[in-house]
Image (cartoon, rainbow, N blue to C red; front, side):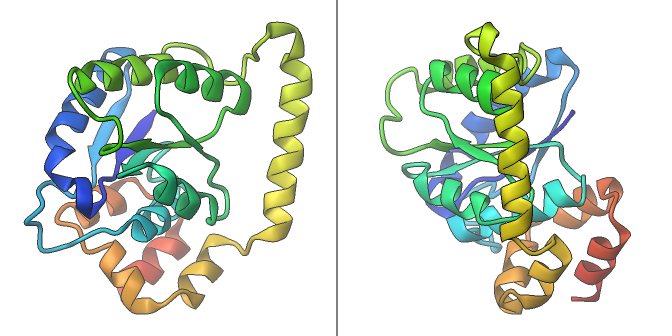
Length: 210
C-alpha cells in the first residue's frame, strides 16, 4: 500500500516526528510511505488544512496513494477538508481505539490527527500505537465481528451517497480556485512522487498543464 503523509503549515515542525513514527510502523508491514511535506515551518510551499484536503483528493482519486495520513492542530479542519473531496473517507483519530475502530468499521482511506491539541509527552508513542492499529489488521473486518456484513453494507451506501453528492475529481480540479490548486501541489517533492505513481492520466495531464 502507498501511504501519503501530508503535514499542515502550523504543525510542519513536527513532520519529522510524524514521519518517523509512521515509517517505523508501516514499513515492516510492507507499505511504502511518501512524505509530501511540509517538511519544515520554513518551507517555501505552505500547506493549509484546506490544501491538505485538496491534495488528499488528488492523491487518492489518481491512485497515486492508497491511504493518506494528515492532520492539523486539532485534526478537525483537515478531516473536514478531506471529506469534502470525492472518494475520500477520512476519520478523526486521536488514540489507538479510534484507529482500530475506524479501520474495522469504516475502512476509510484517510485519517486526520491532532498534532497540537494533546500532543505532549510520549506523543510519538501514541502515534506509533495509532498507526499500528490502522495497519496491522485487514480493514473492514467489523467490530463487533457479527455486525461485519451490516457495516459493509452501510459503507457501500455511504460511498453511493458521496458519489451522488460530489463531482468527479477532474471536475473539482477544473472548478476549484486555480491559485489554491497550484499552491496545494507546489511541494518540493510533489512532482517526483505524484507523477511516478498516478494512475489517472487525465488528472496528471491537467496538473502538468498548470
